Length: 287
Image 1 (spheres, rainbow, N blue to C red):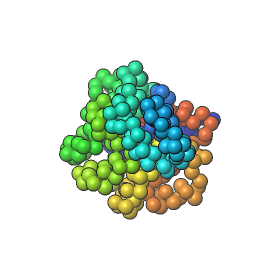
Image 2: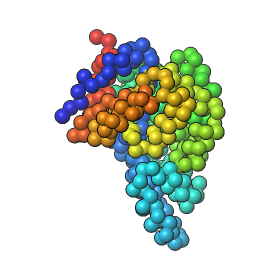
Image 3: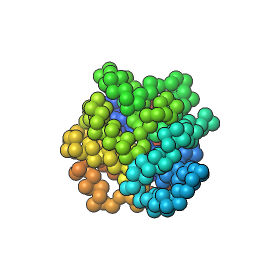
Image 4: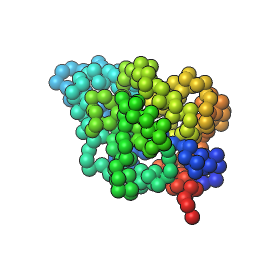
């Protein structure tokens, strides 16, 4: 069953046409390009720990249990980083996400033809940038969480940019955000980034794609934003598998976060993500 374009709220389309909408891209959009989900990445890092030249049997046993619970991913990532050491940990992420042979998918390319005010991504790869280079023949401005002054400048001047909110393995691999400690630093101690994050989410309607309610980064972001402005501001939208959210949960998300769930059928779910993006593109295309 294909995605039904009628499920796209008219308010979202209107916001796009007015330049009042932005996109949030999670790891799910890069899976078709060969990159891992949160759960898969945890498994891969555990395999790297197994290669260490000393006995980690007890720790690995705990890791295998922790990886089954998405709520423990950030804590697990922290332990895995400690076990591997900064150098080995960073090198693995660079090798995994900075691979030059990775190519953007059709979904990434479709995104370049939708008039978002800006794009936020928690992904470490450069697939969105590559899609712009392929489709638009230019490389967009790319900023990270340490560039709050530049982000503020772009927002004030209504200039498009891509925010790599958790860093980029090619630009600054030593400043990647993935562990519990990393998130505490960026969300609770970086005042400049906190400020621009609040501005982005309180002035633009954000469309979440490639993420879910089990992704730890998404969960933390929603909790932080709810604390920051208590659910006020524009309505945001999340494209979500209908099996992942009950109606009562969707209602609560709307009340707590101004987050509207756009549900799709779980059959061929990754194809439906692409169909949603295409429908969004077509809805704002100039005839």
